[in-house]
Image 1 (tube, rainbow, N blue to C red):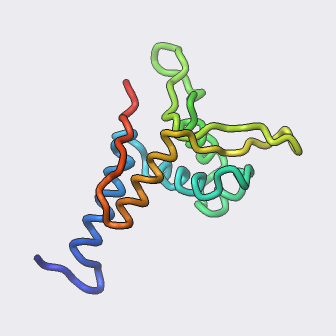
Image 2 (spheres, rainbow, N blue to C red):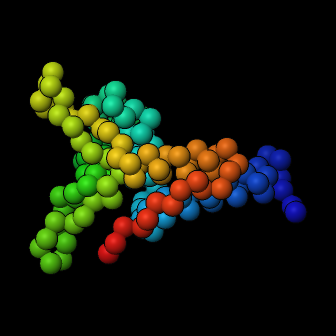
Length: 137
């Protein structure tokens, strides 16, 4: 087993791969930046409804973050080739903020919570505790 201390150990690379595999189990073609938006949303879920916080922390353009948030929700608003709305990943849901109706609060769904648990299990050195079914095409 070869490893380079300055570049990390084989175990650390394996952990990175398992984190990526957890996201691939949800959507085999999920862009890394979308995974980053999910992590940021999960960290702030229920507390900070403002996309500006996620935009600042990720450095991604507003339009990109908005598109990823919609894709992570239950209904993706982009239309497919057949003209029908694409199904979202169902990892989050958006809830109106009563104090300011322009904003939506990000709430993890059961499926999103399962993904977070799997990610934390990977980082803690355990196997995935639950399976998150891949979205149906």
